[in-house]
Image (tube, rainbow, N blue to C red; front, top):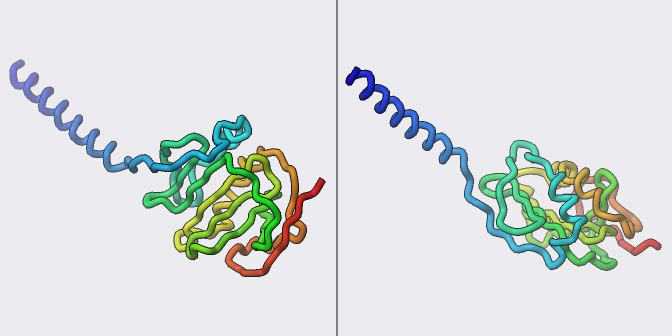
Length: 174
């Protein structure tokens, strides 16, 4: 019996070490983000609970701020809800799956994509060297559609190729 007990303890200890190693290997650290001013809006809660578990092969990660999300390790997509809706702009505007997005390519290859005509506004920051902005916005669209529509781009680029530089004006609609 003594041998069996020692073997059982040894097996248990080995199983614990293997289990802990496997758990730690699959863990990505929490992504530190800041919540937007209106992150506590009920509309953002409706969006946040509907965000996808993955965007292409990028898994959803834990964040430390309300109404935010991140995918990939290292992070390739960051999402924030609760922003002040942007006003009219001359930046390119694209429509993907019935959601209008203003495209800011100032930080290429990263794109800052902000909803237009949704209150509160949401933003996706996408590293386009890791995946296409179209893929990210397509994955986010069904959740973002829960934000109330208050306006639309006047001449959206419906080609959905967010890497082009065709300007599209925006304007509030009644």
